[in-house]
Amino acid sequence: MKRAVFTSRLMGLLLLAGQPTAALAQDSLQPYQLVRSLQLIQDRIAVGDHAALPMQSKLLEMIDTRLREADKDDFRDPKNFRALLVYGMSGGNPVTVEAAVSRATADARDLALARGVIDYLNGRPGEAIEALKPVDPMAEPSDLAAFLALVKGSLLASDQPAAALVLLDEAKLLGPGTLVEEAALRRSVGIAVAQRDAARFALASTQYVERYLYSPYASQFADSFVSGVIELHMSISRDKLADITSMMDPEREKVIYLRIARRAAIDGLNELSAFASARAEQGRDGNTNQGDPRALLYSSLSTVTSGTIEEVRAKLSKIDRSRLSDGDRALLDAAEAIAGEVVAPPASLPTASPAPAEVIPSHEPEPAAAQSTDAAGLPPVEGAVSEQPAVAPSGDTVAAAPNPPASGDAATVLPASAPAAAASTDTSDPTDAAMVKTRRQLDLIDQMLGAAPK
Image (cartoon, rainbow, N blue to C red; front, side):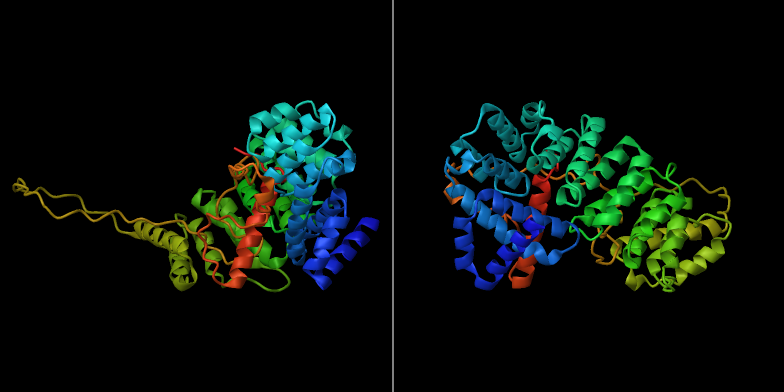
């Protein structure tokens, strides 16, 4: 409660008084106080408070400046040294962390721990695993333990998935209701799919939907969940699947079932596709989705070679092509072609013919084979839009942490929240620019917060 009141007061001052007050808070507050405020803001974001995103950006910038100016006297307090590492694992600037550690006065054990964290942040997983191998997160101070469990679990996800799941369970135990738990649950879903552990997949998915469905990272969970349902379709009952999706709001539930139906139809899992299509059409609260052309298409794909082909052809002919994406229009064309082949009369036997005349080669090029791309055929529903399967085992594996600039001068390093210079997105519109900056920052924070570097 005290931490929440402190953060509320700090944020109120920042919003009411602007930059001068921010500079004053920066100078007067200890690093551990600023980092605790950052954690509380990120925990609010994890449960769906997207209005806290601007506060997160401001705090990251303030902490970055404060730590670049910190001297060895600041780090005589162990709380400030641990806060430095937590800041790094919460989306902070790796160069700032490394520079501050070089100025810190700490014992050999803490410096070794810091080196492992720095290796992790800079995309050196092998060195990070070796440095963090003797670290037992459960024996570490509470303000650092959950982050270390998450990072170690993510690093071991590929080579030691069973050990990774144990560490992710520890992260959830040590950081309930936090962004750490949100990330640990998401990664557990992906690893469970890779391990073909249907029970753990169902449990982690249930817990995620219950607690973090409105997280800005929920789209990554949706990727892992849809892929998991496809991969584990023989092990997960339809009732269990319905139990999990029933905790979603109606629109998200519909989109999830549409995505499952589409993937299942393409993979030839006709029963699963028919089930998911029917659930998507059924809707909730008296609002059906029977007019949704995607549900009609996916349910037709699962029965296109059945004995009711004339009914299927009639259903296909009623689908409004203009409401489909390019990828789904290609699926519709393929379904109509297959249906046409099923009912087409058999070709007549060839008759005897005279010897063929001499063939004169044609110099005209053959028509290129038609190409179709499988674009994401779904409406922009927050939290579940991507059509790409999740990458196992982490569920949302991203690129390694960006390397620091060549210069070692930490004072010239941009804060972690600064937009990447190499981005090609057009941000001439201020609103678009703000959205792009926020998305980049979220991706970076998720990467630092336990996404195993490659």
